[in-house]
Length: 232
Image (cartoon, rainbow, N blue to C red; front, side, top):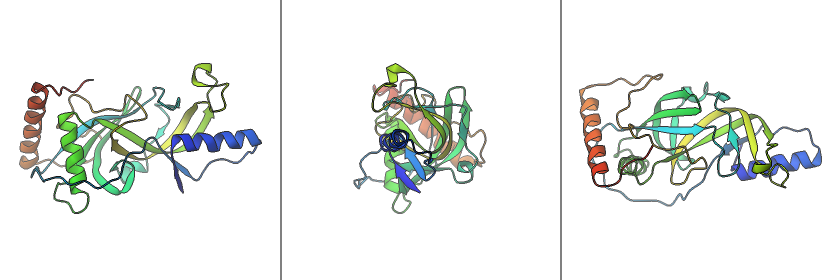
C-alpha cells in the first residue's frame, strides 16, 4: 500500500485518464496534508485525562480543489482501531478517537490524548493537547483510502485545466491527524471541545476523569479570557 498526498494522487489519476488506461488506483492511501516531523521537547503537565472535540472533515472544497462526499465515508475498519496521529506519522499515535459522529456535512470526533509520560509519543500528545486548549494548533487532516472518485466538471475547480479537482464519492477512513495547516480549512477544533462525552465508542469514566475534564474546561475559559478565543 502506497501513501500519497492529494497532489500525487491527482497526478497519478490524471496520468491514467490521459493514457486511457482502465486500471484503478487500489493500492494507495491519501493523506490530506503533511507537516514537519522534527523532534520536540516538552515538559509534562501531569494531566491524566485529556479530550478535545474536532470537525475532522467536511464536504467543503479544499485547498487542492478536491471535495470529499460527506455521506460516502466507510468507518467500519477505523472504529476497530481508532488511532489519532501527529502529522500523518504512523509512528506517533498521540491519541484515540473515543467517538466519531456523522454530521450533515462530514465527520466530527472526540480525541482522548495519550498520557504525557507515555514513552516516545507522550511529549507529542502533550504538545497537541495543550496547543489545542490554547488555540495554537487547532486543525485536523484525514487519511483515507479512495474507493470511488471522478474529476470535477466544474470550471471553477479547473475542469478544463491540466490538473482538475477530484470529487471523492466513497472513501474509507484509515486515520486522522492533528496538524498545523489543514487541507480542508473547516477541519478545526470545536469551541465546546473540552470534555465532550463520547457518542458511539466505549469510554468508561471515573472520578479522576471528571476532575480532569473540569480542570480542562477551566483552563479553556482562562485561555479565552487571555485573548486566545477559539473561533467556530
